[in-house]
Length: 457
Image (tube, rainbow, N blue to C red; front, top):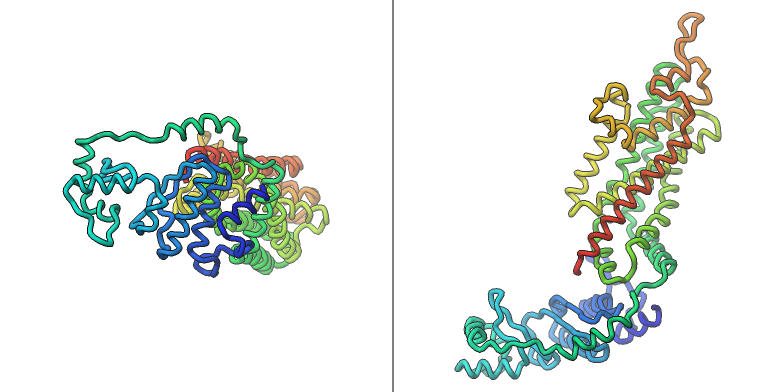
């Protein structure tokens, strides 16, 4: 594959801009003509038998447009490819590189054939092509007459018999065009790391959210007391932390939506498998989100004064990590569902709102109507909230937090039983959260595979 890429770079005459930024509205990159040739290279890298190009010369000056068409004609001859392109106002020099022209008028055929046959047809209609006007430009002024002439003299045949024979003979010999899965995942993982590094606003937003959120919550709930008021404050802290962490990934939605268009174009051209993309995305974002989880968990845990056990702290970091992983998978899934940012953002708000409502924080499980009880079991909030409560009170379930005279009226075990928690289910909760994390990614993969199979970009 590397030799094929290097050969294509030479063929496209792009050696002088190798390893350069393509550029965007903010970053200066390669020129317009070089960008057009690069987009052509993306299309032909897997040597398709038929290449469709929509206005490859638009936005270019006459010299650059001519160079692009010359390049296309040369590549079509050497690669024995069928090249179909749309073009606006081609110059006379460009016409000599195109073998056949198809003119349409109101969706109907006006002419098909060479430039010479078009000139003959124009002459037969009694028109004379002005000096310094090419036949194709003049034909655009008499499309109705050409359409009427074509309807009366319908001798239209596709001159593609040799090409069809070539396709029938050559196609079985073509491989599936894919690299090995390991090579795909390695390359895509490296690209994801570059995206994270280059998308500094997303990287800074996620890290600053974690740091500011952790420090902010830690100072608000600074040194919570071990009494009934402190128990209520801890529950409020856990609920707000869940809402904050699950909603903190919304800013990644436009990045995923932009990436989806690139993914659809590249996978529809068999550049790599959708499954390799999903695995690479997962492999890269797991450690990145672990850093985010640590930046949030460390300050909030010790400033608030939660369970001082080291094992409890490690469990807290684990659950925060699982929360942001689930949130990332949910956003990835909804980015595959949503056509744009507005609908995607609305869906995220709806999903998170419904999940929070049925987490058991607002409505106890026994009070949820039976026809809505399934939402309690699929809520992304329920399992981490249970986990946080067990992590905080399981090791002190015999400790008294409130006294009525000489009688203990509230223990850690009472706090857990109020939520219906009578067993240490932390590892089971982690397993369920892992299932949510994987399930949303599998659903996203299935949707992307379906969309890629129907995409023609």
